[in-house]
Structures are given as structure tokens and as C-alpha cells.
Amino acid sequence: MTILNDILIMLISGVSHAHIVSMGVVIILTTTLLFVDTIQRIASEVLRYNKDNHRPNNPITLLTTLTWYGWGKGKYIDETTGERRRYLMSERLRSDLLKKLCVQYPAWMILSIVFISLPDIPIPNTALFLDHLFSYVFMLIPFFAECWSIIENLREMVEDDLIDLGKVFRGVLEIIRAWRGNG
Image (tube, rainbow, N blue to C red):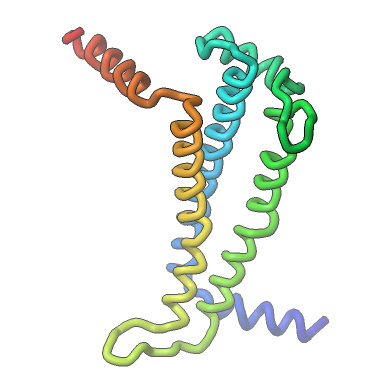
């Protein structure tokens, strides 16, 4: 047990306050993006349920799908399995969130701490250190993974005709014009 304590003390003592602050900022930003990604995936499932079950996407059907209909199985039958598809209760939605929060992202942060604790390895002809570079890359991987996940969800929503972004953009412009008094 003392060996484990010695290793932990060595790792923690090699981490600067600035690195911990940077890691805290990245964790907060990643958590915010994870929240946006989760909301986006739920919205995508609601829109997909309405499309697969031939329901219009208006505020009433979106709300009823989100609160009631979308949590069960719809009328849509998956061609690969021959079963009715589950939407908001999908295993993928829950398992991906659990893996990200409990395994993947903490592992990247631990790798960042391990690499920043290593002895400095200078990169020739620069003021950079290889261990610091790897440490910051490992720390930023969860942030960029969430950015890419949000982009993938948007592409899926657009390519599957779940949402018409042009119509949404025109609606937002209409609201802005009305708010400014130009409408």
C-alpha cells in the first residue's frame, strides 16, 4: 500500500497549479459540450420518431413525443432485426453517455496528469517540452471528441431530413427582425 501512496504522491507533486486550472477549464467546457450533445441526441431521437411514424414536426407533436410517445417502441420496424425500433430508451444513448463520463474522459485526464508528471523532455530548437505537449493533447481529446460528436449529430439530422436547417435559420432571422422592429 505504501508503494501506491508513493506513486500517487509523485504524480500529484509533479502537477503544477496552472495545469490543474487548465484541466478544470477543459472539464467544464467538455461537460457543457456533453450536455449540448446529449440534448441534441435526444432531439434527434424525437425527430426520428416523428419521421418514422409519419408525424408532423410541430411543437405539439415534439412535446408529446418527448414526454410520452418517444419513450416506447414506434410503428417503425427495423429491417435488420425485424423488430420495432426503440427511440429515447435506446441502449446506445445510455451506454455512450456512461462510457464517456465514467471511463473514457477520466482516462484521458489521468493520462494527462501522468505525462505532465514525467521529467521534462525538451524538443530541440524549440521552447516546448514533449511531455507537456502530450499532456495537453490528452487533456483536449475529450473536448474535441464532443465537438465532433455534435457535428456528427447535426450531419445526421440534416442528411436524414430530420430537420430543415434553412427553414430553422429563416425562422430565427424572422424572430430577430421582429425583436428589432424590422419585421
